[in-house]
Length: 204
Length: 204
DNA sequence: ACCTGAACACCGTTCAAGT
DNA sequence: ACCTGAACACCGTTCAAGT
Image 1: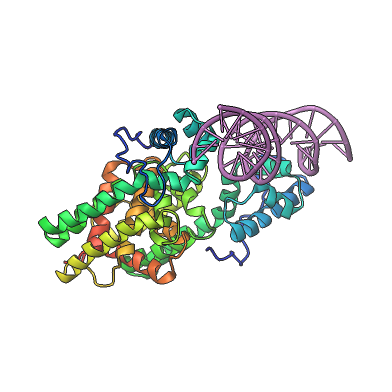
Image 2: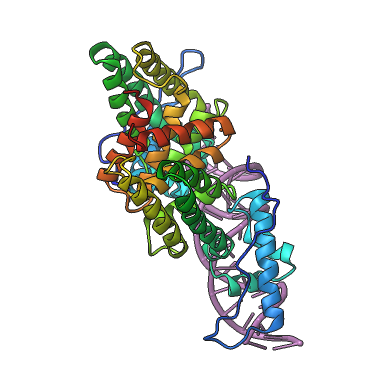
């Protein structure tokens, strides 16, 4: 029961890297329309919706979709990349303004919300967190690094159990988000699960 | 990276309920061979392996598989039902012999292991835990009841945070099992995740 | 250089014909 | 009563032909 993601995707845009020659205007427009359609379709029907559906919404042939995004994960990466950078920036901001325990709590909540962006996305993110060589693994590196910093600050302050690793945080946050995706798991339960997780991480 | 489940399935067997007339001998044999093949195939290739593969291993036509098990979940239910009853019995035994906090810890560990029986099964169990009307929901009722008893004992002893619900335990255990299914999540990490979960549940 | 969509492959599911 | 497997449907993916 995911809510359709209603806000604009805030995608990184389809840029022309300096190393290669500029993209043809129609090609760039197609790529951008595909990202918009994918955001819409994933929001309404989850990340496993038919790619044919995404291409149709964008008004392009299925081959064009494959040309720009050779896999479903590549499409996801383009959609989630900027959000993950945002989560990295959020970590910096929290560490600068909040006590470490509170920064950890707030950041974890944001990670759980992020993993609920589209129905079904938690599974892809889980793979990305655990396997650095996976397609989303590259973008997830930002999250792993941010998690490590948040955790390190908490450890320096002595407020977190010393054996916890950054990946543990991300794995548990994704597990909660994934549970929330599955049917009748309402916001109160999500909040309680995050609270249990935090209690388990923080030392009294 | 699931290990093929090597032990025998300990399935409930294909019984003839008293209400209906006896199953024809060949039909019963086919159902039993299908369960064996499914256990083998799910163990080797995960619960999303082709059902055609399962039928082929059993030496029957695909239609026979569908006749006995109209859905993949029905097949799973037949394979997991007895194990879930076992987990209910384990809860009783632990409550009779261990202090409540230890019973909770041991039972949760067993639940995590159970949700790792086949690669991909944690997702089906998660749905079953959260949605009582789902196909696995019926079998999962045993788990919900057992979890509630273990939790109630811990609450009476005042060793657990009072807002935790039985489904929370099961959801978090499934989340950990699901994380473990996904690539490089080794046993040390699983143990640590369960430990974090337990620390979060138990009050000092 | 890029786009298109027909063609192929694969798998889930049903059902008419057979025993 | 049960079994079989051909047939249909659906979707992912590729690639030859077109602009």
